[in-house]
Image (cartoon, rainbow, N blue to C red; front, side, top):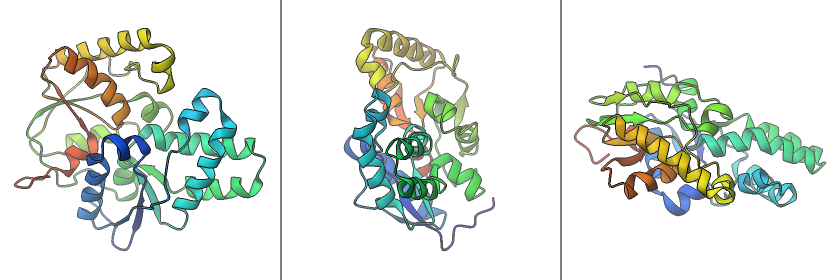
Length: 253
């Protein structure tokens, strides 16, 4: 594997949902990146990327979040987040919101920071040039490619390639993997019955694989599917990609 991480300073974009509900995920990101030689910092001023406001049409309410993102993450070599959804929102929505605000200075600052913002899987594969991160996870696993990570962040097959390189893993394909789990952020709030039906279909496909674990690169989708899996007493556990990559043979992680 090719790693050129020495001297690289990475800002951890934890995302608000991980910070509040799944703190183990950003911790796992730090473990993986530090194992590969990166220096990782956590900008304390970071907060929500504004995706919920933007997706619901409240552009004016989202602009302060864009300004804060630029302030928090300027000056780092790279910004890395464990969420294709939030990273995709930053790259796709922040330039649009700066234009909406009619602030050319903000637009230039956004362009500069956005160009250095990566989903974890992109950073590992494209920037560090690595798929084998030294992980060990001897379990049967199936992977759900979340909608925003594939369609907006465009991570492609990078998460799958990282999983394939994990020692001891039994990686099985998920039927109808390209179908949405029904979360969609505020979609699940506005259309709860449709969301539950879609999540139930996804959970059924997961159970059909016989997997011990369902893995994704977005905890929001993982939480949505996981709720159905728990309700059905499936025994299938949920885990973020970063947490699998953080596991090592003979270690706690």
